Length: 315
Ligand code: UDP
Ligand code: MG
Image (cartoon, rainbow, N blue to C red; front, side, top):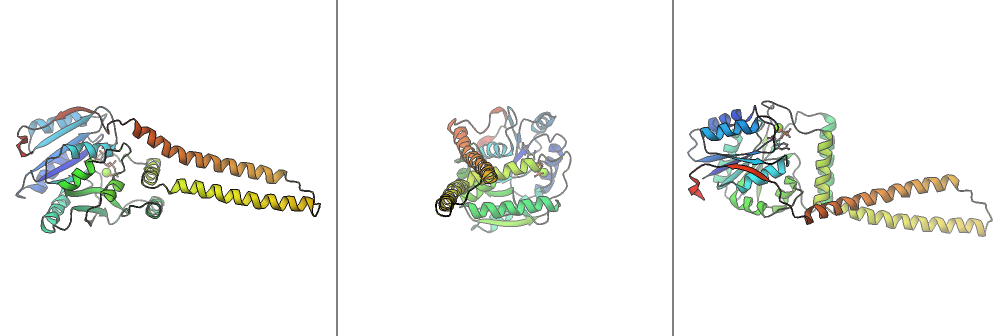
């Protein structure tokens, strides 16, 4: 098997058949074999029903992994990758925003340029609003400053890579998965190619501002301990400031005999340091919470059903 296409699907009932058609169209006459691995991420619509139909028809080799509930796209990617038999593995969305023809180009690059192990697509022009793109830019600026791994801004999960890369990624069994960070962490030589995302074939995006913010925090907490250092610095700085102020107050009272009425100052300081305390506890809590989640050592996903095809001789 040359190529495995890993396709996470959450409520994509009207897209999966069109997606398969597009793949068959794109790879028609390409001269190598490929498989599609659909991961049904606990969809609430007819996605699974439609995937079963695609699997029964087997117009091209189709595998279907079905989760017991919604575990998120990252878990879907992990599950699909673990079922992949291809020498190359590709991650692509089910909504046809990412054209399968681009995968064919990626395969060509991997064939012709052995120095690269990963070909990743980034969006050259985003159709999104100014506010969102400002936040995204800030996110990349912050995380690249804070973290040891460097993330390519705008790089999506849309990428194709060699089996060795897949094996390395599967070894990372962390519960909180952040695939941009995971790809950066495992390394390998990556070629970035631009692509323009198309309109969604059907349905709506699962992202909104708050989900993106959560995702950004996930990335920063997961790939850097700098926020913890912020708490330490903040503590040192306020201790120093408090000490200096104490000194000033004592001098004022004892030497110059100035009365120090401090009601407003006290309220402001209490509020400020109360807020700082909460903020720092919150930061620590984020890390402790992740340690707690990970210490339970739960699997990344729960598989309810797995439909494969007969001739899995290519193992
Ligand atoms: N997806 C998933 N699980 C989720 C959310 C999304 O498997 O909990 C899949 C979804 O079906 C699609 C891909 O992830 O194939 C990208 O999702 P979406 O199109 O909503 O994101 P966008 O393209 O807007 O970034
Ligand atoms: Mg999409």
